[in-house]
Amino acid sequence: MASSWKLADHPKLPKGKMVAVVVLDGWGETSPDKYNCIHVAETPAMDSLKKSAPDKWRLLKAHGTAVGLPSDDDMGNSEVGHNALGAGRIYAQGAKLVDQALASGKIFNDEGFNYIKQSFANNTLHLIGLMSDGGVHSRLDQLQLLLKGAGERGAKKIRVHVLTDGRDVLDGTSVAHAETLEKDLSELRGKGIDAQIASGGGRMYVTMDRYENDWQVVKRGWDAQVLGEAPHKFKNAVEAIKKLREAPNANDQYLPPFVIVDDGGKAVGPVLDGDAVVTFNFRADRMTMLAQALENEKFDKFDRVRMPKIRYAGMLQYDGELKLPSHYLVSPPLIERTSGEYLVNNGIRTFACRYSHSSFKEVDTVFLSMYNSETVKFGHVTFFWNGNRSGCFNSEKEEYVEIPSDSGITFNVKPKMKALEVGEKARDAILSGKFDQVRVNIPNGDMVGHTGDIEATIVGCKAADDAVKTILDAVEKVGGIYVVTADHGNAEDMVKRDKKGEPLIGKDGNVQILTSHTLHPVPVAIGGPGLAGGVKFRKDVPNGGLANVAATVMNLHGFVAPDDYETTLIEVA
Ligand SMILES: O=C(O)[C@@H](CO)OP(=O)(O)O
Ligand SMILES: [Mn+2]
Ligand SMILES: [Mn+2]
Figure 1 (spheres, rainbow, N blue to C red):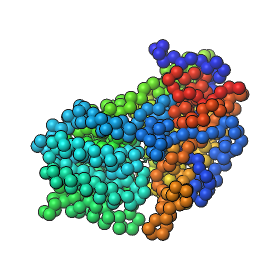
Figure 2 (cartoon, protein in one colour):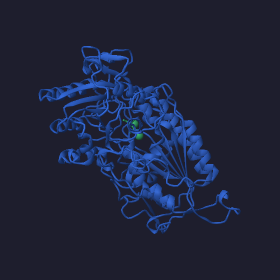
Figure 3 (cartoon, rainbow, N blue to C red):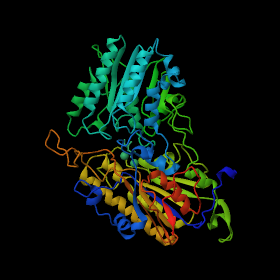
Figure 4 (cartoon, helix red, strand yellow):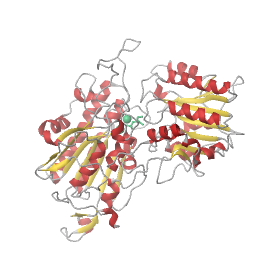
């Protein structure tokens, strides 16, 4: 091992304990009422962590500047949350880096913009992404500045391909967003630039799949954006969105794909040879599939029919390992020396007979970890945890297990999702004795919370709690340690509130359902028979956030975290 990777031994805490790191997705803490699904659901395992050991349970900041977002008005999300959990430091995240690059104008001078600019004189600039001010994947104000900047720098023809949100923002806000965008585009037209929205669709049905759960989602987008083909054709995007929202059960997240056509019925913005394409989402996970389709010569995930020769740039580079895409407007946060890489590089003593004839022979340089979740969250505890790197650091020491998610349904239909299976896989991994760390993501609070279905979310929260119980029981059996936490809030508040905290009523007389994440803190609990006596949460880290978890977990493995990591949450009395 290179000496720079060597972690110092913890002065008091032993090595060799199995540590289970459990991340409940979308599981925040707030006051109890009927819109707090975690409160309403039966969650005995999580409740007992809170009640039984007050010095081993606390809250952590999971939003805003604590996770590298531009301001404390920004809710947390899985990318920034798992980045902080795994990296142990707070990095300025994509949202903030793009803000800075736009404010300074640097974005327009760097390689990525200069590359796409070569298409401006004779071809079209296409901008594809999420039309939202949620700040999780993209922001409308950033798109507006990008459009203005491209117009000022010679773009003659611009086509915007919008994906409607309703997940990070209230359902129905897509109409106002499209109107705002149309106004900007008409201003550009006033300056002689041929600028229009060319296609659209709901993010969850068109384009923004992740972790290869369902390539058909990306194909629907490809057909509309690149080929100019979709089942619905309209003259104008605002009209399209309004009309498609009239269908029973329609919502912004799942709007069907549409294209804008001219008077002759011809799509106004297919992507053609010589064009430039920018995917303007800064967040990676839901853009990498489209990025592969736009960038890779060889591609077999669906029939692209026509693969135009384009200049393609991402808002950011989405995958640092695969260098995908190769051109980008803003450099992503350089997240290095993550806790996963350190731990893999610091052999700890194991008693796994798989590595030795005598089960008590010391074997060094073996650190096995096992990460698992189901498909829709799989990359969270691997890709995001490892600083937006796909693949493992060392395949002999890490095993990534993925449980296929249900696909083609919204998760309120099956709110238990694969929580049982995730819990059982984690249990088996813990009991196998092969792993020093077992890391899992339990998705229900978040994925079901995003549907806005309160009854289903309650069922999902209970299923998540059952999975926690399965894992805690296994930790108990092997004498291990657990760290249970969450990446950001969601299921604990399902309604939009006024400043006083009262639920807001919409035009239809019903409460306004909140499908998004929240600004609430998340719990973290430690324990298990392997936890050394006297270990408890320090009182002098009152502002602790997700980034403090990595040093804590390193301690529990018997190491001291590197100096530049955010401080540990624990002390040994
Ligand atoms: O589904 C997603 O992409 C986001 C919300 O936009 O949720 P999470 O950050 O929990 O993955
Ligand atoms: Mn999440
Ligand atoms: Mn979410």
